[in-house]
Length: 233
Image (cartoon, rainbow, N blue to C red; front, side, top):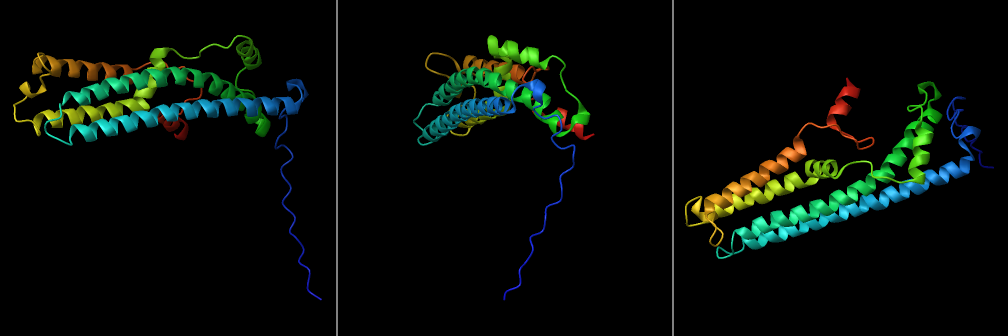
């Protein structure tokens, strides 16, 4: 007769784990759980919409760079058209980011004030009036961040590096791959090269200023290197 192996019993969980999580004052626990799951699902869908716009921007940029360097007869200003196309994608993505921030702010509110205190009641509730604010937001949903902040965020995370690649490719195209000297090689039709180069420099400087200037961020629970360093220290 084969020896029977007794299964090891798991260690009992500490008695305070989950204490206060979804208590009766917060309403039925199943309703709160379904509410949280629904908000996470909506946030996920808007996150996918953001990624889809970024993917299209990368594909278009790669196609433009490939075509611009495929033949010396191809005009260099196609790369500047690519920069303008990135601007269109940036505008679309910034609008989607503002919508995404609506759902993420709700998810972060629930995580900070329901799940976190439930897992560690000793930490207390983060925000005193979070229920009233969340209730108002459900009654009258509002955008949480400005268009300028959304544009700045997407510039920092995605579009400044992409634009830097296009600007760099344009400089290489009008210098190393052009028989004319710079800035004459930057001319576009009747527009002199000096005017084109100055316009490109101003556009690049404006994008860097919008994306990198100091500001108060209103995005809910945004992960940034500065905040992570402060918590680590």
